[in-house]
Amino acid sequence: MGSPPMIDGAFARWLADRAGQALLELRAEMGFADAAALKAAGDKVSHDLIRSELAKWRPGDAVLSEEDEGSRLVDSTDGVSRLTADRVWIIDPLDGTREFSEEGRADWAVHVALWARNAPSPHGLVAGAVGLPAQHRVLGTDYPPAYPPMTVEAATSGDRTLRLAASRSRPPAFLTDLAGDVGAQLVPMGSAGAKIAAVVTGDVDAYIHAGGQYEWDSAAPIAVATATGLHASRIDGSALRYNEADPRLPDLLVCRKDLASRLLAALQRHSG
Image 1: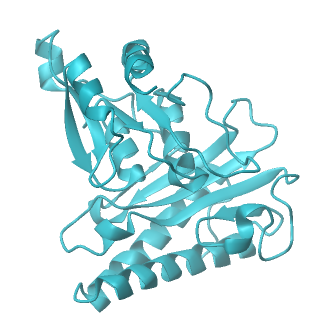
Image 2: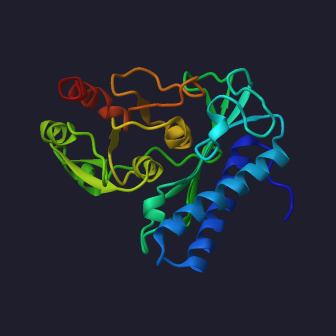
Image 3: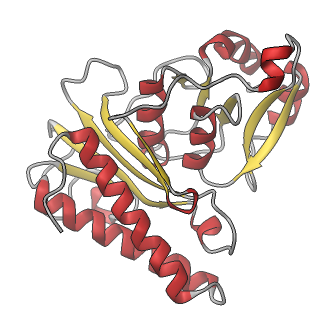
């Protein structure tokens, strides 16, 4: 196989796509009889592929990965501290292992994002891609999707029901009350990447999470969402920040910009 694209955004897309194809092949090879084995193999196959390509094509960059025990502060390959590095790749090789291990489910993803010290935005993300292998697509900052189209219902009604992506298994306790307050319908989905991608594509209007996540759970999807023009913040309205000493990033809101003030106000009422 030839050299990958050298521009970071295109490289992120290439990497997410390659890892996604490897995961689809693994699913086909192993089947779904042993979910635990498939999950473990999926994490390893995708992680090893991404790590190998980053080491080959971006050897001077640090890496923060869910699968690297040593990458919380220091890159486990070359000892580079990510906190002093100028460039850090933030990756989740397989976001949504549960969904990946269930036959027929397509709501799992591969996350590849790049944080840079000189980035103009508070979150510091300058490139990213979300691979949705079972949906046969990759969303990336190199060619960000158009601002999410309004649904037919939105175009014909000023009082339609909002659709909020929600965790299948761990939705915030307050989310049902918040949905009732703003007249929204909860739409259960799998991985964080799949949920934010659904906001990017206009399949849902917003995603609210407050159950605890890490930087790799959202870095790539947030890079794409903000490149698309969506609102993205903590649930108190403050900026999302990446490559922090503590990689936990417990909550976020991603939505259409015209909904941000309404949802932030509702969050003030219900998330305390």
